Image (tube, rainbow, N blue to C red; front, side):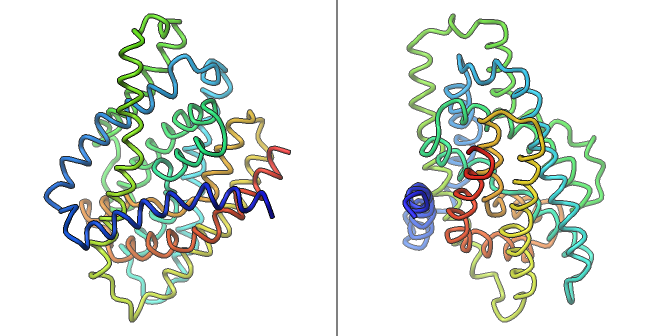
Length: 315
């Protein structure tokens, strides 16, 4: 019981920040006009700084197995989610083809950044945070490789530049810098500046998630779609966590990467598929249902899965 309370106390601040973003939007203090610039600064400046601060000089990313296995696990778990989502989508009543594909994609892409990063910081150590960033390289690749064909039928090779985002480039640069032993050449004042900017990334990102949910909720028809929300919750918060933990148990992973698998197994659906569905012609309402349902319920399921996973994978 003590372990459950500890995990719950680590999870709760994340949801408080999301709720704060929701309230700030409803009060009109965090306006839609500010979203674009704040999101651009968060993604292009603060998250790369957070990645660099976590990775530079970290011995966990000097271990070859972490550098190899972490992105493979990230890519593979999203691919597994897509396969399970497509199988389950066939049984959804009254779902049109675009809705089924959007359902599968949104169920597959778990929240791999804004929620697990602060949990990794709170529950574990910098080594686990560093491995989490390397793991997310595989998730980013899967996001575009699976997302574009599902939502649009577009060849993902036409959008390869999407993979060259500032966070991805920062992670790759930091890993290479460590490999070359050049991390010790970076001045202390530059490292401190990156640290300060990186600390802003997660709180601001959480506020923006809450604001996005506040924007989209009025467009969600609550009189229907229960089957979609229920199926998504059973998959994302029930079956897929069990499969993820099974993979973590079977594969030869380090302790840090096993912790990452535990965190990602417990995650709700990510918010970004809503943006992709809107931009690439997917079913935005289906994506929104999946995200809202799994995020709300994950406050109850997340502590249990993390506690179970840590007992199973990191005894």
